[in-house]
Image 1 (tube, helix red, strand yellow):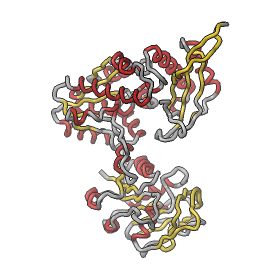
Image 2 (cartoon, rainbow, N blue to C red; image 1 turned 135 degrees about the vertical axis):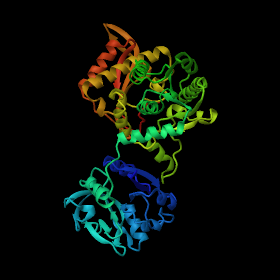
Image 3 (cartoon, helix red, strand yellow; image 1 turned 180 degrees about the vertical axis):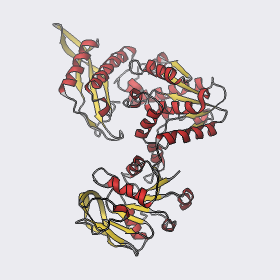
Image 4 (cartoon, rainbow, N blue to C red; image 1 turned 30 degrees about the vertical axis):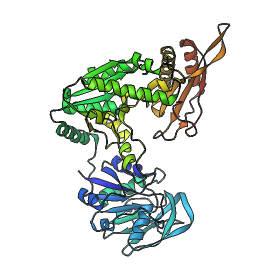
Length: 510
């Protein structure tokens, strides 16, 4: 399979480069700049992209690469720091700019060959750099400039090495997609063959080969990642897969029934549903601290999953919905992440049960997982559902978790989702939900004084959950949600709307 390697120097846009390449139907992977030269050589990529990064080539211990990559005969594209590094390593001169250039600039094209073929002149590009090129390496030519950057793009046409001072991968660069397309198809001679149909075929073959005659167990949450993982693995090995769905009593209204019906009726997957509601509620009795809640729920889930998995003879593998951003976090130039997400807190099972991992989605971004799910015939209701935390409603039930409080929250949350879906906002929102607060307030209902619970509504937009902004829902939508909750959910007399961004607040309340 043809691939483009993106070498990561710590840019906030590195993942975006890989995503843009995949959007053009060419497979791309990110590797850290610390990867050995032999790995690049052995992979024989069609092209190499050097990402941007926060460092300066003048810094002590500035990230670098083995100069031998320039002799592989493989096309190379350097972006921002990648451009400065190419210049520095190949004998050109880089200098500190008098002032940092950040934001939009107008690109003036000097040479339309190859990289700028059919790219319009005077287009907007996005700059973000503190150093600049003052002398090109031998064999390079200037192919574009801006008012502040005399060398906005340079090229060694003979060796097929190109470098850009701006970021073609960001939406602000008007012709960025065309520039990347030219690099892929005119310079690297790639073919647009990367798609979910081809991915499914390869993934199924890999799973079959890895599993052999053994059995696989999968922890199912009902979310996008675990559902797509289960359906894909089932497509490969059929009844050798057993999915375990633990109903911890902390789920949304009707969630257990939806998951059970979809997987059994639509895909005929071997599914074990464990009703452990009472068990979780007993463990959570009297617990108010959010961190203690999370630990109790995580530990109890592992115990139950282990108990059930041990009942299945011949299990050697655990299927898990790890995605590519999780993999990148663990190996990126910026350093290993403190914690790699383990699906539904089952990571501890691997050593205890001596299981091997199957992670069929580990090469995919979230949007690609949704495309894969569509190819596999999974309903859009599952593929586009809002993220739901592993501890479930327990961390949206602020204070002690009881059966009574959970039922109030569950009914309020159901109304929030129903009304947001009716309004047409659901697919345009990252997450929306209800929170039950640990306070009561005075109200008047039917000429009588009440002293009842408060529900907070939370709706946010985000791209990765790291930062988020509250959604400006129309007043009429909020009004309908509030009226329905107060009229239909017994025990609630006040509804408030959370207008806190992240930071300073988190998306979840606990």
